[in-house]
Image (cartoon, rainbow, N blue to C red; front, side, top):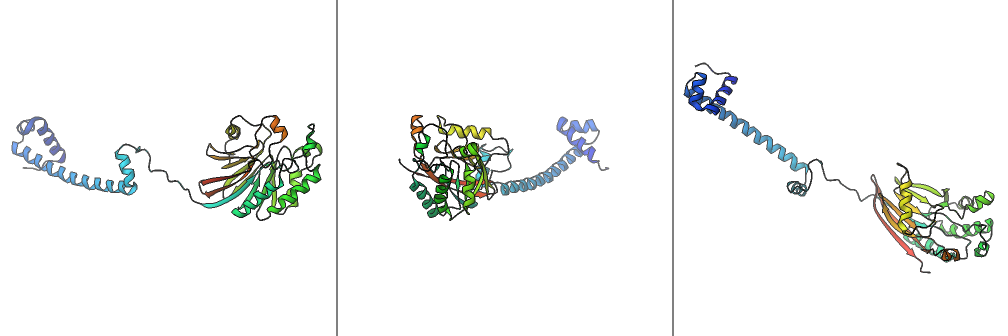
Amino acid sequence: MAKLSSERRTEVREAAKQHGYQGAADLLRITKETVRRYCRDGSKISDIHGKQDVVTNNKLLQQIKEKYSDKELRMIVNGSVSMGYNHTPIHNFGGERVKIGYLTDTHIGSIYTDDSYIDDAREEFARAGVDMVIHAGDVTEGMSNRAGHIYECSELGFDAQKDKSIELLGKFDFCPMYMIDGNHDRWYIKSNGALIVKDICEALPHAEFIGHDEGDIVVNGVTIKLWHGEDSSSYAISYRLQKLIESLSGGSKPDILVAGHVHKFGHFFIRNINCIGAGCIQKQSKWMRGKRIEAHTCFGIMEFTANDKGVGRFTNTMFPFYT
């Protein structure tokens, strides 16, 4: 008997499935034994393909096992992980350690500023071995036209406040110091165009003026923004910083924000930004008390790791003065 083609063998097997051996034989005009023989040959072929499928499946299982951990596989089996994700995200909390001392609103030249508080901050920064010190504005008290303000000044005028600032901040020469000016410092700009914080920094080899009201520092790829502002306190301490972050346009947001001006301390994580309200060195003034505004008199030290993803980990220590 001539050999059947593969198409004919398939036809025989399909006919046998539908009509049985005898029905297929009658329909195709071949013997019943021929139908039975080719159905047996088909089973052998299926066995071969089945063995090949087992080998393929084993390889696939091995690849899956290599790609996922036992914990991830159990999560997949339990339906805890969508198979649409290729892997569990890997976070990097390590990196190069950076330690920064920060202070703001020293208001040097004010009767409400205790020089010993600035010295205490300097000593703590030196003891901690900070990499740098940052100042978020209102370095000096300034001279306003507000009635009675002159009686709240321990040093009167531009030269006196500048010299006192150089004396106190000159002792921070164990590390770099970066400063912006605040609204009190800019009273001298408004009255006669004088740049008191810039002049202070030019007189100190370790200090650098980085901007009016705001300035950025990049440390190992991490952007730190110093910001002062001329707005007022909010009822909720975090609200002011939340609105500031919302106002920054895309691509201009820092990794860390250190803010001065309102004399409030707080550490908040807003839209993936570590935001610090840096408090103040000046005690509550008579003007603030009259406005029922509390002063958080303190300074702080932040420590974080910088890596290719930005800030890996972040800690913040606040040093309060109970006045």
